[in-house]
Length: 332
Image 1 (cartoon, rainbow, N blue to C red):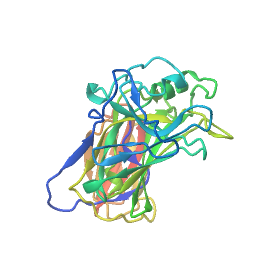
Image 2 (tube, one colour; image 1 turned 60 degrees about the vertical axis):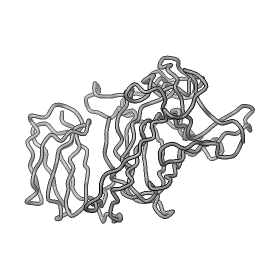
Image 3 (cartoon, rainbow, N blue to C red; image 1 turned 180 degrees about the horizontal axis):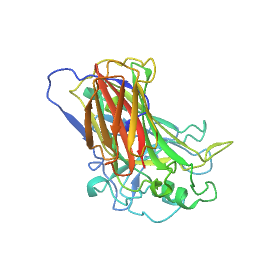
Image 4 (cartoon, rainbow, N blue to C red; image 1 turned 180 degrees about the vertical axis):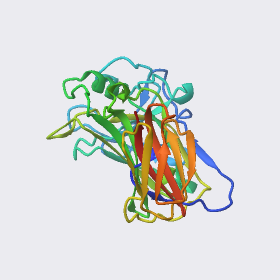
């Protein structure tokens, strides 16, 4: 339900060019029959993943634990949005792909050997060293029900808990500093009625990462043990979209925070202290990506009337000199 970067991005679109996007919908990938999934069990220990659009989606399985355990990407048309537990690990909580499509990807980022919850996806062909527009995301039924109810490995989520995906990009083999974070469950709100576990398809905007040749996906949670994360390390993906024409300028590492907002949560007034004097414009954006208000930045401090905003989570986006800075705030 959120689309923003935790770190600030130095981005500027190059002039000219016709926008060309490629969407990996997973719908052209074959499945044996309805209500099934695909994992290639032909070569244990090797990458038996698949390609779609301009990306390779890796998958590795092993038989070292007495059964077949897979990690990273599979694709599915499973519709079971009800059954809890590991046996239903290939289903999205939506019970269907984005925009009522049949197929979608299921991502299991857990590595049973290293206990890491990270997977890397490589771009291909004309998408290499170009921006990724983003993708749609939702929870798997397995992860959703585990957070909602608890199970033999995980506890039921309560106030203060969260489950999130962090995405970073690689360029030329180097991990870039910028990141995009998306909360698959968020129980951090002062108003507990706003707590949620995601069960719809929502867009994750990856343009702030700039030009990349691969992406790193990492899941983390507040429910952990000595062996790592207890929350099932799954999410579902659809319509992974690359942009082959709109090259972005090289990243510049931020020196420090561009601004701060307070009080947070806000009631009738939000104050913004701006530390980066190159910022020229400010926008308030809601959780669906709509721009609610725009402001010109003339001074290093802004006072914004928030009395007309509906209660909820918003992003204040500052723009200037080819840079964006995104700050989250809550309106009570």
